[in-house]
Image (cartoon, rainbow, N blue to C red; front, side, top):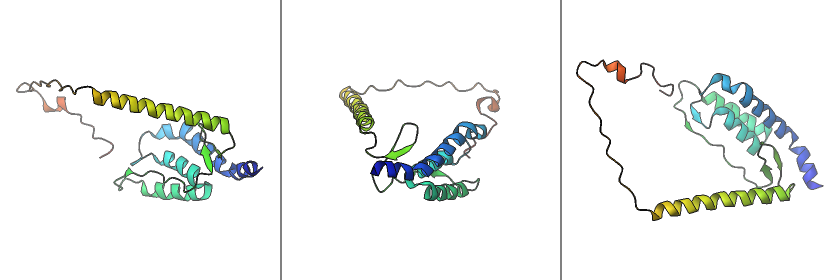
Length: 160
């Protein structure tokens, strides 16, 4: 019964998640990669609403969007993790109470542990192999009289 009440309280948060997922699928691709921060502002908004709720997450997202402008240096700005462990995030992004779907949580935890152990095995195997020295890269200079613009792009990077 307690999980059902918590699920009802999470409905506004999940409505915000649905709106942000729709924005990211339909509108965000039209703009391209213009955000100066990592993760992008829409990904930050999705994470902040999932972690902090609709009101606080929306306020954090609005502050992030105000900071994302051409005069900002940008950088890495991750969403801080929630201070509690009451909720779980599904693969789609819905926020559900912890313990509401125990079989799914157990399966997800087992998959996560298998994934981590696979990475550990690969790291151990890579550490056991002797390191091979990289082959030298031979570069030939451009012939005299070759135009310099042929080797560089006239379009500046968007991240300048």
